[in-house]
Image (cartoon, rainbow, N blue to C red):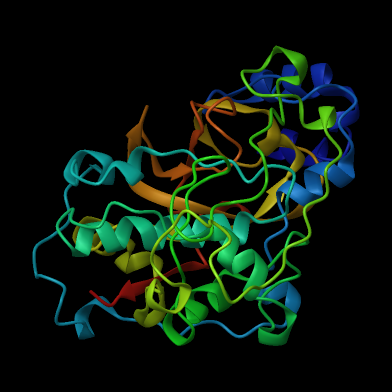
Length: 335
């Protein structure tokens, strides 16, 4: 580990090839490769990872729900490995990889996706709509000390918004699903002109998030005030209880510090090797397991399926790497 820390600042995304070579040379837990073009700006990467972390922004944490105090939890021990996608096969949202586009909305996308999954799970698959991340981007704003819309935000406040204000439905850009679909296009953050989607640099449209009182999707027949979905409570999960939480209730968000090398992740169990810190990131935890003797959390990112391992990554568990085991959050849906 000394060799890694000694060279942590030498390698950066300004020379991706050297950074990739170094990462793959000094460890074998995960494989690095090129995800982003060489001329990617640091500002753009910081926007992709713009979650506010409570310890860095003087923000309060949600109350912790202890598994032993929760009557909804069973006394059974969690299995050795778990993947929510395999347990709740009647909830297609669990398979979906989101794309936040060129908006610093990881905090909203991860929260909306967790609420979507949990609402489907709680209704035994009856709810198959999508909770609107765009509703959070537009309406869970500075007045709530929640976000700066596409400039970053705080997952805990977004879950509290679910409880206090309710969130309407809304699919991704161009789907015309729900009351308030996402308004930022899919784009290829990391494949340039070789990706399935248009290069993020190929359009300069700036969509200004506006909190409205009527559904922007005029073809949606349910009024906005009747389309809101509420949570019973928002809470934080201790890492010691996380496996039981995932197995019995479904996904949670993880907020963690993000370093330059994370942007180069391809496969394996990620841990921070080199590069400087660029920000905070919020993602959706789907499960856990062990690979080549290393324990990990299975996580869905929001940079579309072309990034990483088909939009997913594994991060080392049990070591609090990148402060990844300090901020697991969720809310319980009212159904």
